[in-house]
Structure formats: structure tokens, C-alpha cells
Length: 118
Image (tube, rainbow, N blue to C red):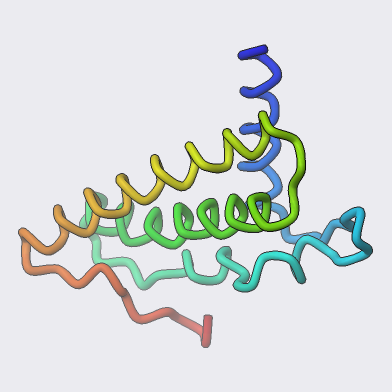
């Protein structure tokens, strides 16, 4: 059972990084189901500080995972997948808070200006 959940989690992460829309059972593409394309948000301007750059890129990445999990909760029916989606939301939200707190403690805005109109 745990193996199946790990496979589902890995699939969710990989689909988050895909640039190709996927067809869902409802006929919508995954790009339509998830409101914002998160990949573009990770095109942050680099500061030269690996810690800051990492956290600023990870925040939108984690937000994308939350948004995908919310789509699952709205449309999914499998109890195991829905439970996984709830855990993803809780874990990713906690990590976002931690990352924002670390940046704020150093006087750094977590919301970097995006390059190239992203």
C-alpha cells in the first residue's frame, strides 16, 4: 500500500514539472484543471545566494503542488488519493511557511520579481 502511495506521489510531482498538458477523464487538460502554470514562477532572478534563490524557487513549486492537490480534492474520488492530497497540502503549506519565515528573518522578500514576463 505504501508503495502505491509513493508511486502516486511521484507521479504528481512529475506531472507538476511537465510542460505538456494531459487529458483528464472530464476532457479537460491538466493545464486547464490547475489554474496557474507554476513552472514560469520559478524563473526568478538569481541573487547569487544559493539559499535565497533555492527558497524563492521552491515556494511557487510547493504552491503548485498545493493547487494540484486541491484539484484532486474537488474532483477525485479515490479515498487513498484524496487522503494523500490532504497530506500534500498540509506538508507543502508548512514548508512554505518555514521558507517564508527564513527569508523574512533575513529581511528578504519571498516574492522575487520574475524575469521575461513570467
